[in-house]
Image 1: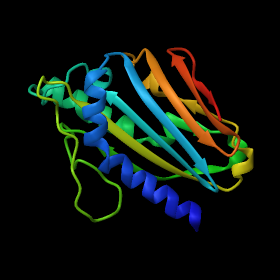
Image 2: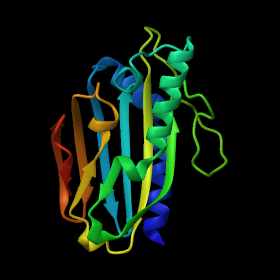
Image 3: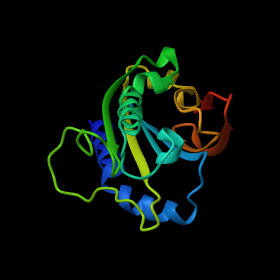
Image 4: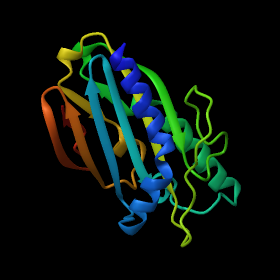
Length: 187
């Protein structure tokens, strides 16, 4: 129960904290580079992905043309497929339980994370930079077997060149920089 509550709080924080992260990331806004945070506690595995929209769709302004609207819709669909983007160790028997997306230019709702409360949404920076923050919660039947996370972001978003990852698990904390072609984060 503690793990489910922690995971829900962390996932809610993904969306609620998006404006602050977007403001912080604004100073270091770097095209081709994104951030990944992974927390495993108990049966919960929570993944947070934050990226400039340019990495995902090739622009950061509101979609203006049919091609840009399609690019945004395609990116949103890919991001909602968390089980395709992130594969925890098979032996851990994890299933995707929740997805939350927040960005100023999403085609549908700003987010979809199954709770009802007021909070701020990510807004584009005054200089036109915009970011997307996505959160994923997995429930793992065998968390002790959770050794790595296979990452499909580079395949899904070819403009992404580097992923700055941080992790906190029962095995400890750490950080790594993954480049295109590196698809596995040890946990």
